[in-house]
Length: 96
View 1 (cartoon, rainbow, N blue to C red):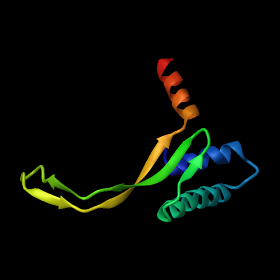
View 2 (cartoon, one colour):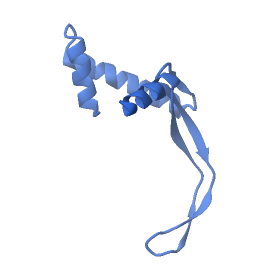
View 3 (cartoon, helix red, strand yellow):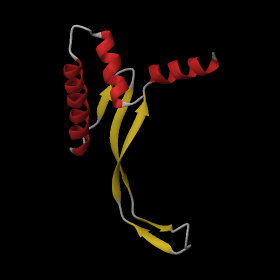
View 4 (cartoon, rainbow, N blue to C red):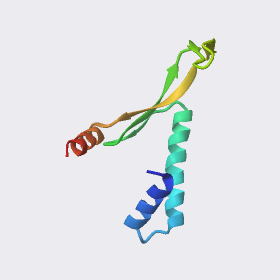
């Protein structure tokens, strides 16, 4: 689902609010999650999942085109873990 599709869906479910209000709402939610992750915090949305930041240690990689070894520095990456309810819904939908 694209951001615009999410906004459209929210607008259809809440016709008393304008599309512009929905755009602001989605932007605020995503920005708040981003800021929390930047600060190293964990963001949990019950029933949906949890966002966190994980540290990747430095390593030696390989350039697939040339085969030459490349030093890959340490970095922090976002990580998402699905909630139990979401996992169950996806599993049930796949079985149907």
